[in-house]
Length: 337
Image 1 (cartoon, rainbow, N blue to C red):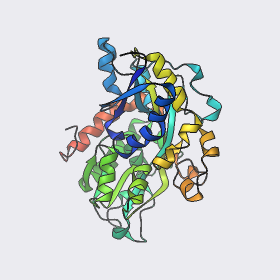
Image 2 (image 1 turned 90 degrees about the vertical axis):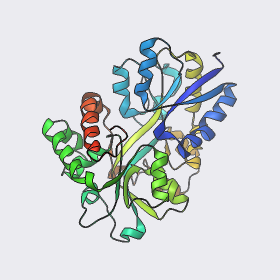
Image 3 (image 1 turned 135 degrees about the vertical axis):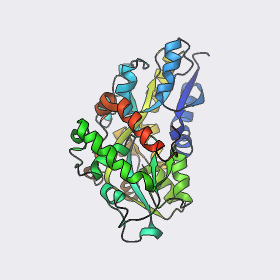
Image 4 (image 1 turned 180 degrees about the vertical axis):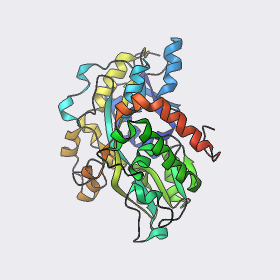
């Protein structure tokens, strides 16, 4: 490849409307401004880049990744350190720019439910999601444990302020797994991508789901009879990193610097229900009060949530993924079985 072309690698979970939104608001206009071309590739997760890095045959440049995954990816040695002038850190949501990561958006893992099924008696907390007596119906959980084991900790009695303190002990992690085991018989689908989660909502195939607020709001905007709450939501940051040894490193750096500008990020919420990581985008976006209310970073929504803890996943991620996979396989409905 030449230095005028880059490869952006998206995860399967980011397919569909979210991918198209980034392409429309960020990638295409930024590439045009820089006179670059880009192509897309797909991976299961950031860990797939390890094969390329270990073999010394790197073909990817930029990977989509969540902030909570950065410590693990950094420890695995698959990330390139970013140039310090990628962005002005002061313009970004605190924590959304690091030496190895630049954020593009904020989202929340929330409870969503079928309004026809539950009417006014809707679930409002993670404990309600686990309450199959008062809220009977088909559930859906992500096939990955991020946000799911934290939900189980909340359902076990941990508060939003203590969820990671609860999970930092072996006793707490095992209690959360036991809580997950309780709900497994009621999980009819282990969704594998955001696009699949949206389809489940649109088709009314499940009565309740834990998924990303943008996917729910997008389905609601398309006519789905669903609702959701930010209460007990997990606030996360999505963004980009550069693969160590990227063949087009300099072009990738220029590209990330460009897409991080507020002039691009302000258009992202108009293409998909999300919140830009660049706070200047909020100032110039001209969003309505109704639009802001759907953003995970809205002032009225932030106090209802807890932030994803990347250090927890760096320390305990391998154990959690293995334990969660075994639990899901008990129903033979997980793609990891």
